[in-house]
Amino acid sequence: MTTRDMTIPFTETDERWAPSLASAGTHVLRYGLAALLLLWGAFKFLEFEAEAIRPLVENSPFVSWMYAAFGVRGTSAVFGVVEVGAALAIALRRWLPRASAYGSLVAGGVFLVTLTFLFTTPGAFAPDSPWGGFLMKDVVLLGAALATAAEALGAHAPLGKDRRR
Image 1: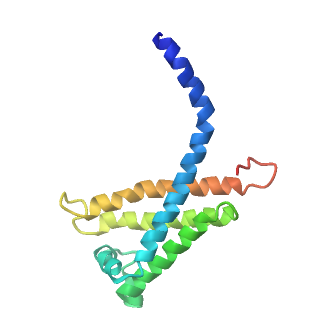
Image 2 (image 1 turned 180 degrees about the horizontal axis):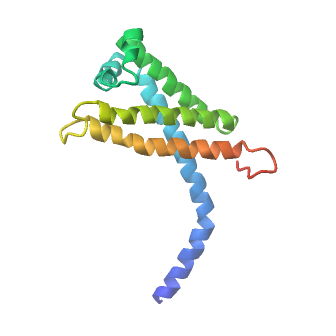
Image 3 (image 1 turned 120 degrees about the vertical axis):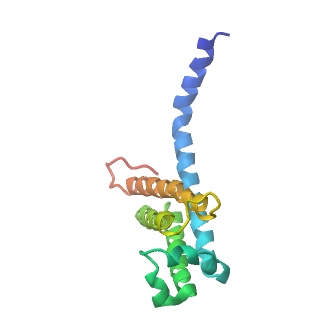
């Protein structure tokens, strides 16, 4: 068998499996994102998580004002409501694609805010900081949120447009 013979089936496999892989990848992104938001959002109602995010929130010019308005636990609970709400909306994609898209966009907003913590939390980029690597994952999650929002918005297209289910 020559190298040329080995490349032909690979090309055919690419073409045959690409739609299935894209669909599976989108499902993993969507429901993985929803599961993580649900888990992290639920934790926001617990004291340990409210205290864990305190150094990030209190140094942020965007959300630190919430401590004066709601306190540490209340602020964390507000974040929890947003994250759990986004997770539930994202998970509704099969029945309510527009709601799912909006949930993904809310999640994208959450990740944009958390990414700002990289720049507002003192020492976040220090090699011994627990924050830098922890927050960098939100770059990937932001991409997942945007990709699932786009897919769900495409699924909501009126009949006659490119509508995928």
